[in-house]
Length: 116
Image 1 (cartoon, one colour):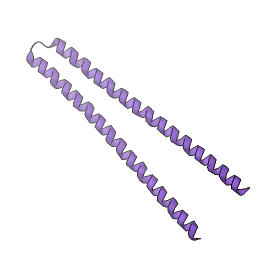
Image 2 (cartoon, helix red, strand yellow; image 1 turned 45 degrees about the vertical axis):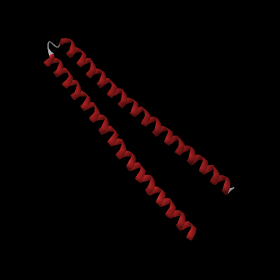
Image 3 (cartoon, rainbow, N blue to C red; image 1 turned 135 degrees about the vertical axis):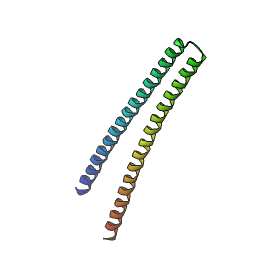
Image 4 (cartoon, rainbow, N blue to C red; image 1 turned 90 degrees about the vertical axis):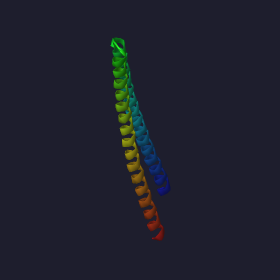
């Protein structure tokens, strides 16, 4: 009877853990999609501005200014992407450290139970 209860408890806890992971993955995917969409919108806006600038350019100097503005916009967008990636890297490292700590605690508890 106790073993059946233990198995049932393990199954329920693994199902809850699996559902939590699935929700986390879905949330992460939605966050990535939103960020990518935002970046694409910014790139499109920058290109449309460049197109308008080129259309109205009267001479080579104005055309060069258009190019410099687009270059600046691209660099700003690239910096945003790098900041996003760095932020995600830090988040992942924090979660990894938490998992390692929990793993060490479980191993310690297991060793203590084994010694008792």
